[in-house]
View 1 (cartoon, rainbow, N blue to C red):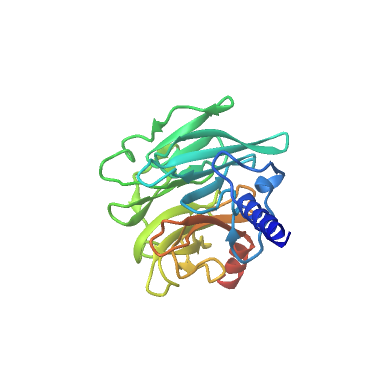
View 2: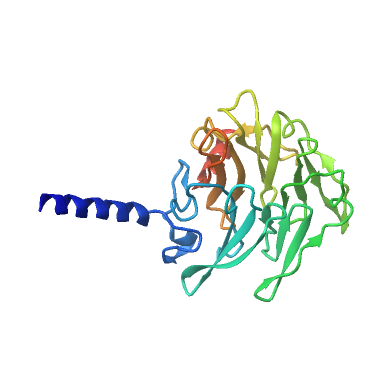
Length: 290
């Protein structure tokens, strides 16, 4: 009898453990805002642990404007291509609705009608997306190794370049797109400077870089636009976000309430999770460094 009792306890324990992690096609019913997740405070937490953030490689979590869609990048095995997985909330329930090969980091235009992907983009067409289109010769050139391109409501583009380890900016003057130029040393200092995100109103810029004063590997930095329309100093976003591991790929949810980013869980970044934190930390830093 004692042996049977112990066996039942062990089986229940295993089933409980299995129930906390889901395969790519086996998800619990997710209802409500933010894919049914309890929002974090001012200390970063894993996003959807055991559901989205689990053992393996999950990158670039981003909500689309309207907060009814969520996208992230993963790959189903070593050496396999990176894939974009998209979820959509319908009748209050989140379901996977799209999967396609990754050709650049996804960042949405502020109106939600364009999905930027490195040197290209997709436009909304009905209930889906167009084929990927080129941004044109100013950007779609062999000279640039763009990973992420972020756009403001004014049409300003900010993008990285893994070939030269710099972040560039391209504004719109009237209706004419201006050629990209390197941002100043405020941004382009350190190593692995990449993955910019510009606020829709251009009030701040977030990126990641490995700098001597950082916490370890790449840290996430922010710069606020000053009254003279210049960018203020680079501010390390602090220990509630940055760690002694790799922290990168930050975006802010379109409702302005949360920042999502990536953190390497192991030393070689084979296990990477999506984290999120209250965007109040941005306002706190703005007040502190104003």
